[in-house]
Amino acid sequence: MKKHYFLIAILFCSVLLHSQERYFLNSDTRLYTSTNTSAEFLGYFKYGAEVQLLSESKNGWYKVKADNLSEGYIPEKFVATRLNAADIKVADKENPILAGGDNYYGGNHLFVLAAGLKARALPDKNSKIKEILFTGDPVAVNYLPKNQDEWVNINGNFDAEYAKYTLRKFIGKRPDFDALLKEFDKLSPDAIADRKTVAERIVELAWNSENSKLAPAYQRYYEVVKQLNDPKLIADTEMNMAIAKGLAKHKKPEEIVAFSKKAEFVLKGIKTKSLFLTQKDLVKTFGNPIKKASISDECGLYLSDLFYYYPDLEASVDEKQNNVEIIKVFINENNKLILNANSVLDSSLSEKAFIEKYGTYISASIKAPHSYSLQLEDSEFRIEFKDGKLLFVEIIFYC
Image 1 (tube, one colour):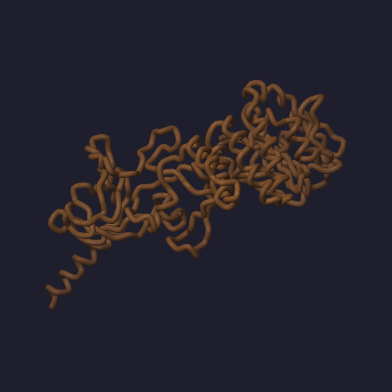
Image 2: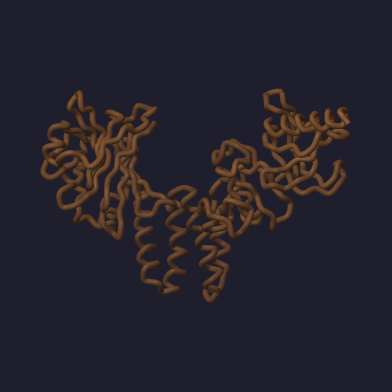
């Protein structure tokens, strides 16, 4: 009886050890349904993929779990606790997963094929949406199931906090922009739903490409929008077309920096000096802050890790040196940003007027609508609009 308990204890310790270790694949391989390379396989692993061991090695094979929670078998020789430069890295020519280094993503990856793709917290269409992805976005993929209707972990991570899932059929090789244009142009004008689907993919892919592709993308999309006759969608599209026009003629970085080099705020009539003012002037003008807080500033980005918070501004404050650096200002009748003598951002500035005047200086993204950035030497202005009106200006520092 004691011998029986001893064997159980050994087995328990062995399983516990495997659960604590992390295991990686030192080569491309496949997830097989049985312990034979001639057997049916479920999907492809790329070099560097992490797996969880579900059994001890038996006849040179492990039963494992892939990051999409699929289970199967892989050869023991490809399993390691660490990766190194001496790994043989046998490549599977049929493996669709792309290795890093293609200027889009540094690790194993594929690309999103669908517009507005919902990444889920679990491999379940009813689970929480963790992120919305766009056509042409690169996503991390270490294991790819063969079945188009199975789920893929597009963060390559077993940790539930970071794992994200979508269906296999929605990711693949990077879409070709010109091919999508041709696909759209071949569709009948009466096929409005199909035209809208393809046009959405074209627009999203254009944002993930060169700025020059935005104009032809929105040209197609605008055709569909006019057919749908949705006033808000038409207005939003016309706004995006104006943004695209500015980005196509984008200024050089040095020109943009020079444009806003002497920027300063006006706060209740008080002018800052290159975004700075004294702590005494701040308190005299705005009173005591509604909140003081210390932040973690590991990069040393701010004047001080002590922040003052007011209803319409945030500032980093060095009380000992009597110095204040403005971080965020809500624009209203009292507050404005002066970029230079001829360029003032105040409460009367509409989003449309802003884009028309500053479109060649700003950066924009489809992922953050109504939010724009203006480059500075070691930071940038983040300029946010809401309902067509200027809401706030925030300084974002680079770590």
